[in-house]
Image (cartoon, rainbow, N blue to C red):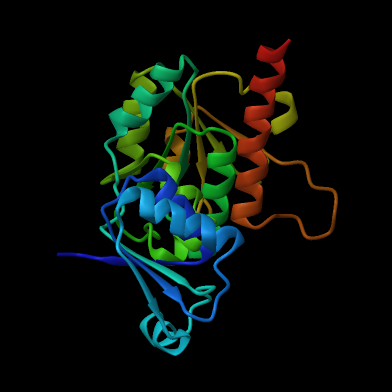
Length: 252
């Protein structure tokens, strides 16, 4: 029976709030004050019928190999990945144009967590990640996202370029984010449409096939000397920009 050990107060609280995983056991350090977020975590665990254990902090340190657990750990089942259709169904259920984030082989858990936190904040309907050579949803990613990943629909696919073609057949425009001369300035593009935004890997960007499958490319205007942004920062700006276009237009 596969188990995962989630850690960090926000990550544990959101897993308990979402109740999408099998919840097996909450472990709390005896040294933490059971107030604030910790009190909220304990209340949520009690409501969900999750057994609660209180142990010495040193034991928790050893179990989590010195991770920044903040005095709390949640033993759960594996992350509940979904099929791509479920992401599209969520958009239909909300009566919204699809807003998807496609990640082309991001490998750094912190970058992935940052992007997922932004995606959840703007109501993204789904995340698509390839099954090979990419970071999956580990406890480190859950912690980096402050638990936002527990509320997202995430699909793992075998071939990202084929998945892009499937999305296009379903009326979704697939747009790649790339600092490239062939890309359009993101401020000049209307992104208030059924959208799949592709973010490339750290350093290498999008793979050739994925780039060629995109309907068009966009870039972020940069006036400084560096010339590019971290993948997580750039992706977060782009997905938030797409959401703001929708929000402003439909709020009018």
